[in-house]
Every structure is written in structure tokens, then in C-alpha cells.
Amino acid sequence: MTETSPFSETYDAARNRFVDAARAAGGELQSYLNPNATGPGGESLAMDTAWFGPKDASAVLINTCGTHGAEGYAGSAAQLDWLTDGGPPSLPPGVAVLLIHAVNPYGFAWCLRGTENNVDLNRNWLDHDAPHPENALYDQVHPLLCPKRIDDKAIRRLLSEGARLISKHGQWALEDAISRGQYSHSDGFHFGGTSLEWSTETLKTIIKTELSSARQVAFIDWHTGPVGDGDLIFLCFSPPKSIGRAQAERWWGRDALSSSHVDELWGSKRPTRHGILFWGIEQAVRTHATFAGAVVEFRSARPKSNAADALRISMLERWLRFEGGLDAPEASKYLAEIREDYAPDRQSFRDNVIRNARQTYAQTLEGLATWRLSDAAD
Image: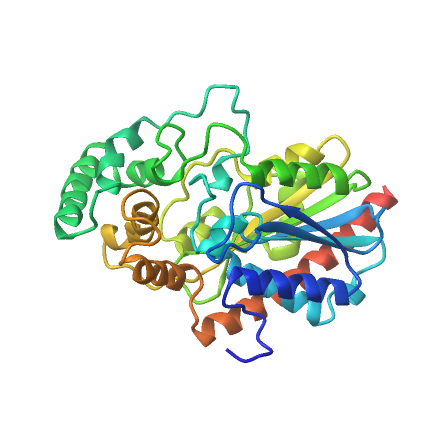
């Protein structure tokens, strides 16, 4: 990695570079310290924001990274590149950008996907006083995903018992049960929590404080993970024929957002979702603004050979948290595997991330400006 690369080697470096670049670009900065956790070196953890453009802008792009912790390296690099490559001075009139760096700073710092409480933030933003969404099939697969040791015996059991469950329930039903989110096993996969996480509460505060003047809100939430090399998957959660869906299709293309195209890139039918940031932010601004956007994945992982291989990264994180510990002899090797999946150091991946991020920022901001003018003319 060269000194001028926007990619950072640690969360702490990424945070410092973001803050310095945002300040140099004239941004209005805020820092929200996480009181519940620290980083591997005892460093403070924070969600940092930078506002560019008029404070009373009617059209605002919210751009987040690090919702899934270790996935934050690519999103942070995209934000830093936008800051240092002339993004702020090129904003269209009446348009503002709110960059939110490290929504999940704990996961970012420790190279884990979940929060300090093993919560998946894209399953957490819902009413926890109401009954949680059910996921009965997860109860059956949980013991297979959470062995005391990740060895050949555990993998053989996972594959054989998994095949039995597939024959009974179907391939997609099992995939959906594993990844849709569950609220019964705090030590399990995609745990949605039993209350709002610090990150979710903080994000709600930011949205309420910063977006009171907005009338058109765009949203890009940078992620990584699916097999690929920095190319994009747009996950738009707006209903078909809605205003939000129509705007997103204008910005990024109808074909890019089509379910068939997304499923092909993803490798299977997309699972069910509850409690995602997309819907939480949309709900938070709906009284005064229309909303459009997507979770945007930089494809990052190498191809997987079988189901156990595909589940290995999540199994490693869970084992480090609840079995071996982050100071286990295996920890450095396992964390390196996790990082290679979510934040590979391949130059081709990094080049494609920056190229695709620049194009997405340009498309979104141009589209947001057009949306603003169109609404003003109505």
C-alpha cells in the first residue's frame, strides 16, 4: 500500500485520516464516543460525522461505512477518496453530504462484523418492545454453526446435518434461517439484539439532529463480503413502483437493481430481512422527507468450495467471541482470514473499489440534485 492510498491498515488510522481530511475539506465535524468498549490497543472508539454543504439543504446524501465492522475498510477508503479528490467543492447547489464514519467502531477496530454485544446492526433497528420476528429453523441449525472447536469433526457434522435439513426444508429456507437474523441466541449468527445498540441509538440521534431541513434524502451504506473483486451489488429495499425505488433506478440503473441481477451476483435468492438501517432511517425522516438509496456491496471474497467454506468466516468470529477468545493462539490467524474476506489487500480489489465508489458518488449526487429541482418545480 502506498502512502497516498485511501486504504488504511487499522481502524485508528482510518479514523484519524477521515477526521483530518474532513477538517481540511471544510467539513463540520462531530464525534460520538462509544462508552461501552475500546479498541485492541485501548484506543477510544467513535462514530464520526462530517457535514458538507448548506446546513439547511433540502437534498442530503447520507453515506455510512462500517455498519458491519470489518467491512468498514473499503467504505472508509471510499469516503477518504471522495474527501481528498475534490468531492466537497463539487457539490451541486442546494445539496449537502453527511458522511458517517464507522457506524460500528468496535467491529471495525477488532476486525469483527458484529458490535461489542455480537449484534448485527442490520437486524437491530426495530421495536424491541414488540414480539421479535420468528426464526424457528435457526434453532435447529444453531448447534451446527457454533461448535466448541472448528475441526474436521465439526465440519463433517455441519455438512451432513445441513444436508438433512436441506432435504427437509429446501436450500433457500436454510440459507434464509441462517442469515435473516434471529433474536433468541445472543451467541449465534446474525443476532439482532434485545434492545437498540449504542450504534443504533447514536445513529437515530444524528438523523434527528442533522436532517430536520431535508426534503429529499439519499442513502448509501457501503458494505463488503460477496464473492468478487470490488464490483458492486446494489441492494435497494424500497417497494416496487415507490418514489424511492424510482429514484434509485434513475441513479444506478433499473437492471442493476433488478432482483434477478442481484440474485445472480449474490449467488442465491436474497434472504428475508428485519431491522435494517435502510428502513430505520427511512422511518426517521418520513414525516418531512422522501427517501431513496441502497446498501451497496463491494464484492470482496474469494469463491467458496462448499457450504462449510461459505460459513467459515462467521464461524471463526463466533468462536473467537465465545469459545477461544480474542487472545487465543489461533486468534491472529483467524482474524487474518476474516479480514481477507471483508477487506482483502489485492490491488485489483482496491482499484475497483475506488473506481466504482467515484462513479456511484457522482451518479447519486447528480441524481439527487435533479430530484431536488424536480420537486421544487412541482
